[in-house]
Image 1 (spheres, rainbow over the protein chains, first blue to last red):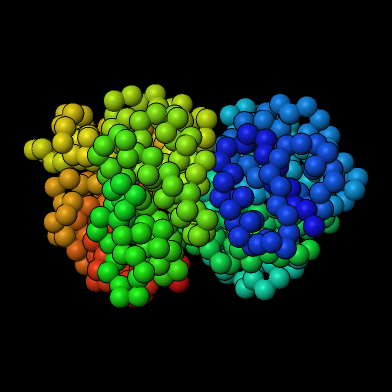
Image 2 (image 1 turned 135 degrees about the vertical axis):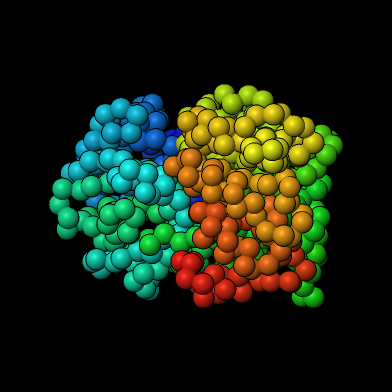
Length: 208
Length: 251
């Protein structure tokens, strides 16, 4: 099996690479590339993302044919794809970080700044927070409700259809922190930095 | 609910731990990778390396340490010390650091913070503020505490937030190494001035000091070095103590 981590100059992805390789060991091949043919032929794709919504969308668009390839992979071929942090946020129709920016539009909704309630909550939301699992997700196999995950973000994904939400976390309000829509998965938290429990989520995705 | 973080810090010189945990079962007490792994297995919420390598020719040793650590520890790794420019930040991130802390360079050239947070995202830019009390205010020191800049630490903290820093690592130079506790006044003043998380550092001698840093200093995270060295306290003990005092921690 081949799992491809999409390398599209979205910032620091070494931790994502290290964690997937740790879990995959020699059983699964982990590719790190923006090569369109490699993405097309892989079994699963990981879409990481750091920095702003706009910078990540711009970086995707800068690689000719990449968005079309990802669309085909996830929407037409329905192969499993995992978005992490801004990688998840880009599933939305639109994001409002820096300026209004069109997303991939795979899951209807928007990405807006977390309401810090006039400074009551510090932003970014940095650190370990518990997840409240609201529906069974294949990537949560063996993960207990209220497990701690590592977060770093100031913006939240607000999907129109709440049925896609698989977990939320409590920070100012119930923030969407995991989604599953058919073959599309996403986590707002960083499984690659969430210790053994995070590696378990990666393992679940690899073994889908 | 978001948990307060405990961050053990290791001083690394020429690729070796200067002070560290002194456990009998340690293969090599000077190996930063092995020590970081013990901390992360023990429940550390993040790991911090402070590179205190003095000579330029040995600077590259930290990259090797970061690369090896990031393949074994799957909690966030912050690296600071000698970070001068975007290139240094880029190299550390590529080796597997999750955050880079900038001290002297941020004071000398705040544009580094603006540029790096734009390029890599605020989430990985920590500005380290070394402050010392002078009369009724605190002044910024650079170059590992040797140079007094006369810059007001609280104003500077605000400026760094506006420049794009994702977190502030605030160290009291008066308290550092004294083990008498954090400078609570300094921590709470900076924490109430900015809307980004503050990590308290400098002066921890016992577990109550960690409690004070969070409860009185309003720090989001507490960094400590020596109380975790030589096995005085484990990270697990520290967390259980904070938990018993009603502080939310990840256990």
